[in-house]
Length: 331
Image (cartoon, rainbow, N blue to C red; front, side):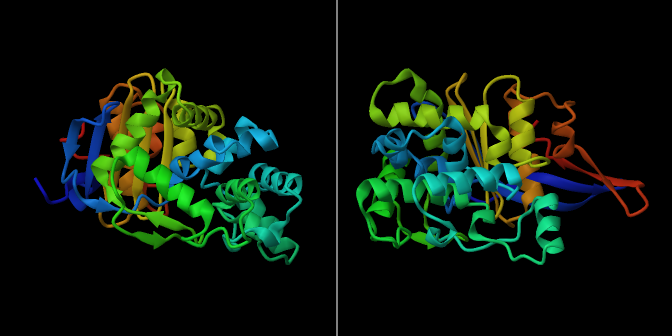
């Protein structure tokens, strides 16, 4: 099958009113496909789901060790955070440790998704800073690697040593030559791969704890940091954070823009990658929850699961009018 398939449905009364189509792949640690829906060969941009790959050179280069980075900082390097105080305070301290400031970031300012942080800016008539950008942790990691490599200030340039190291890591773990890149919302290059390649990369992360080379050690440190600090990877109320907490075994989850999602399942040495083709986040969140339920690592009736899968849809009076649920082929 080469076309996207139905993955998530929006029900109103007795009918499926809308359907989200997509592709999904589950791989084992060797990169073989365990299950697939749609087209595993479809070319995708993983967006922020690739952040743990982009953080590999930070660790393998020795830059993380040289600065004494903590597990919290490694989690932030893989994060798409809400811009809450727990995120921005840590990134600001990280920048200070480097002798740098907000002006050295190249991700651009972003109004924080965290309600308290958003309200604080409004009430103080203050504009958001680059540290509020959901990718500021990744960029602090880039700056750390850049300091180690003694590169120029424009570390997001595709020809910069930082981004060359990122591309090398990406092609190594996906096992593919990336055909092109797009510029992400944070201005860094985001490299394309097949969906199978991305799922295989996540499965490689999942099995990395059994290896001893530098890449495997780094990969293990990164997913362990994500699992240890789910609140830093995304934030309260977010699917990444809530579903990681709800899983019955260690699972690292990461969303990406335009309805991409990955999962790293170390206990099972499996990886998941999925793309909802219409770019709708609700479809990706429901689908990843359904696949985790399918694999037995998440309970369908857990309160966190029910926020994203089989979740009631309420109208403005609080009356239940429908439900968002996975298609029968997923469960």
